[in-house]
Amino acid sequence: MNRYYKFIQQNPRKYALFPLIAYWLIIFTLTTIPGNYHIDKFHLSDKVKHFLAFFFLTFFFIQFLIFYKQKNKISHLLILSFTILTLYAGLDEIHQMFVPYRSAEIYDFLADFLGICIGFITTAIVFLNYIKQKVKE
Image 1: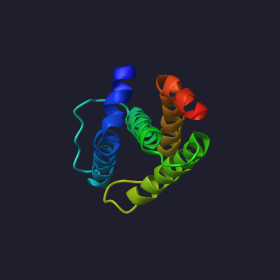
Image 2: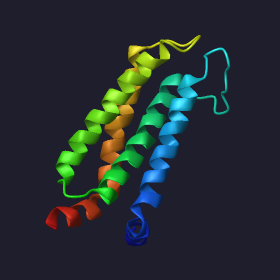
Image 3: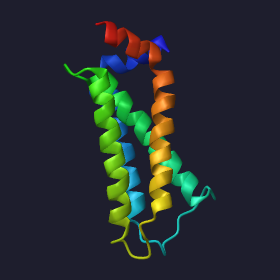
């Protein structure tokens, strides 16, 4: 895992920001496709797709904040990221009300929110050593 940290630290913009932006654009693009144009290569439940989308978005978002932070404390960044991701999950559901053949559903939002929460826990476990080092600094 140490090699991974060093790899990202070499160029956080390239290795942490680009994957976040690319993934976020993919999510936005997929939620903008009208509901009657069905692309379902994975045959997963809609709620599982929502969960996984926001689980990985959370991972990329926190990874970016950890490696790209300037002078903010990690705890402030985590609260900020949780707020931004939760707001985006809600706005994404509202956005889908305006996409043909799609709708906003509270259960989709809850799946998004659960993905964010589990994503936070998983990311904290993955980056725990790195976060401990940063808190000491």
